[in-house]
Image (cartoon, rainbow, N blue to C red; front, side, top):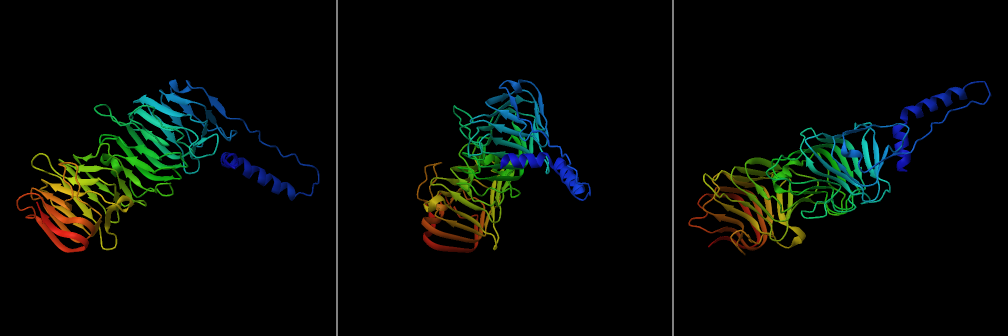
Length: 418
């Protein structure tokens, strides 16, 4: 079926020509046999494992339903440009290991002629995928491309482990990685869709109009530092685990102002999210966030002037919902040394136990307040809390707390002080 699709796509003009010819001849009074030429289809070109050691451009050949076959985990060291309409199939566990430093990596299809990267066998998790280990050119691009049936095995064999249909290695203290993803469908993978779990905030990456579906795990794994590069122009549903997964690596939000938008799947937070110096995080209306046991959000300054903030900005029609993954419990929100105006509006906060591994604070409150942080909470429901809703751990901890229309449902205690 896939071969038929390739054939139809790449020979559209030829098909129209033949159809017109048949219609014309059928109207003729001449009963003589008409010879209609048929196009000869060519097999794909097999690319050797060392093919990508130099600069390459891969072109679409209309006579080949599949343009190229790759049989190994090919090391891409020269610049690589893949043009519209190209179809590449990968054999079992084959893939692209992109190691080209500042040279260009570009896979650029069009709406009518997408690039297709597939497996020689159409089964989930058949080929390995694409791993960008050294890719620093800010023009690196994957656009109007279908990546399917990847994720057969991990993209790296030693720690740190990267997996998925497409992954980018995190770097520290060196030239940042760079990649733009636009109108890319990533589907039917054997593990996760995208692995961005170790990216730091200096990475020059962006995403828009993605469709990530049909994977055996979550659609996306990403660090808290870079979760904001994903947005509501994309869809992430239809996977075995429909969560946008924020991992424990690079959990600090500092020196940046970012927003987490409402997505078509909930956020899943594995551990601590620390908002620190010059870090500002807004969680937008309609976001659903599920947090694992021991996970928590920590707007907590370490150095004066404590310029940092957390804004949870739901609406009456689209509240922000913070709750426990699998319905057990999670830590809560730990405020400390925050002199910016923090706000929680139109939120539902449930199952927060008040456990914060930083400082070994256990069984405190859903909102932990240290050093009189500035906080306004309005139109918010606290529910099913085993301990306190608000917990203060310093002198006059609630001095800068303002509340309005706050409801408590099945809460052990509303306000507690250490």
